[in-house]
Image (cartoon, rainbow, N blue to C red; front, side, top):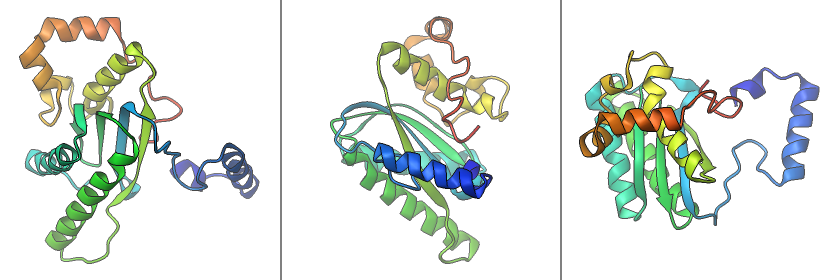
Length: 199
């Protein structure tokens, strides 16, 4: 979305033409509604404004996500919540089942954030994007990418210092050595480059 704003008029026309040729929606990421399996879900606040400044606020958002996803019988295998976006590694029988739970979370948290600020109608969330997991390597690299995200965005020096992340669950159940081995075997390298619109 933000790159699109910087394109020339001719580049925008060509970009939209290419999306039409592929059968994609013109101004949002394509969602293959009936696909099933594991997916990386990314949602960001509108214009990447930071609303979830504290650990308490991030935990509140995480709890809202857990509540809705569990009700929809969607398994969340990995997660990280940052001040202006979150990543989830989910498993679902149908990608179409994720839209409504996320909309409910986004609507509820936006209303509450606006209430706290004494505002009405302010846009808080932008669209979510999804990427289907292709194979075992893609799965574990995605998990490492999610856990590394707070360090990637310079919030902490080491991923374990970020509290609102499933990394702590994995450390508790599998240990630090297992995590190190996973990192060596499935390094992040340039994962996300060219498609992760969060930079």
